[in-house]
Image 1: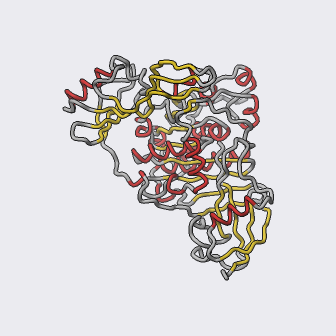
Image 2 (image 1 turned 135 degrees about the vertical axis):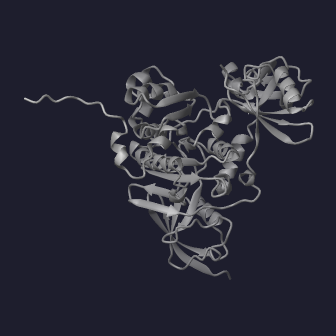
Amino acid sequence: MTEEIPVIIRVMPNAEELEVSVPKTATPRELISHILDAGVGIPKTDAQSNQIAYQLIPKGKNEVLKEAESFEQGEVQANDVILMIPKVIAG
Amino acid sequence: MQSIKYIAKEWDYSFKSMNWWNREKVKNAKVMVVGCGALGNEVIKNLVFMNIAHIVIVDFDEIEYSNLSRSILFDQTNAKNAKRKVDAVKEKITHINDSVHIEAIYADIRFGVGLSLFNDVDVIISCVDNRLARLFINKYAFMFSTPWIDGAIENISGKVKVYQKGESCYECNLSETERQDIQAKLSCADVEAEVHLHGSIPTTSIAASIIGAIQVQEALKIIHGYQDKLMSTSLYYEGLHNLYLNYDENNKNMDCHCNCKDITVQTSGLSNQALLIDLFSEIDTTYEHSNPIILLRNPFVTKVQLVEVNKTVNVSLPKYRLKNHFEETVVLLDHTDKIDRQFAHRHYSLEQLGINDCDIIKYIGDDGRIKFLNLNPKS
């Protein structure tokens, strides 16, 4: 059985917090996709129908987790707060 | 009683006491701002206040009433007249500080701007609203090793990132979602239809002021040569929760064009008003390539199908100008982006072929290698 890490995902810009347990082998890409499909109200597209891309950044670490690397490789620890930030595109 | 006289001082009189300020460098600086929306307004305003000598502004849009709540350089009359954003900005700026020279280009950065501009400016400030334009700026800024500063806003949040060749690259840091979104937009390449974006992304003058100010601050560092003081990380700002987050996202993809060496550009005596046959002659006589193949950046279309009426029509237009000629959706039936001496439209001017003023023409020489040729400005 794959070991899981409990983390808090803080979704910006509204700072909603989601408590999730992520498998160590899962990737940020998979988790973001899972959150967007979970029906918790996080938008997938903006007002102009552009797909919104998100990044995961552990609070205090200030480095984007590589989307294809596992949370274990990203050295994510239990109870980490991870910011989920939209890559804004409007000007 | 002593009379009080108004003494007109120089615009940058008070800047002289700032120890980092170098008047000569600012006086000789040239900055390109792409996009004149909320962010572009703030950036241009700050550049003009800082007395940047030469500013090139690029935008293809007209002013709407909804723009007024976050655009300091537009007014209600502009909106009523649906004035071009670049023209309104130029007019307003001239009233504020007439020592600044503004070059206004009403065009889509991806199609209507000569590439030599990317080489001529000290820094490019991106205030665009889409990924394709950013990708384009990234590609051509790096072709000439020109740094560019990206800004983006939404609601009362935003992001700033400084991109420099060899240090950081927009394309290398695209996520899979972004690549899919870009690919979906590019895959419609055969269908030349005006894309009307419904709805608008909520932005505020607050986010535009903050992000635009940081963009100009970084541009000033580049102009002054303070490369070591530039932001090395991305900055995400979110106003509701007072979040200022600096984070690293300097991924490097070794296959990306950002790893390319700097190019050498040949000089042409021609402008885009010259005929294609004259260009072939010049390449032959000056650079000794008798059978060059010109690689068009904008495909040239000779036959389209009008989808709604199911009719085939012969045309002779660059692809990006099709939308000016047809209101309905058209499918490209015949087009090319490679032309040689036998090309049927060799008596067309370069402008008719979609080559812009001050453009850089890419061609394959007789030795099979790619060359770049810089056109003169049209007189």
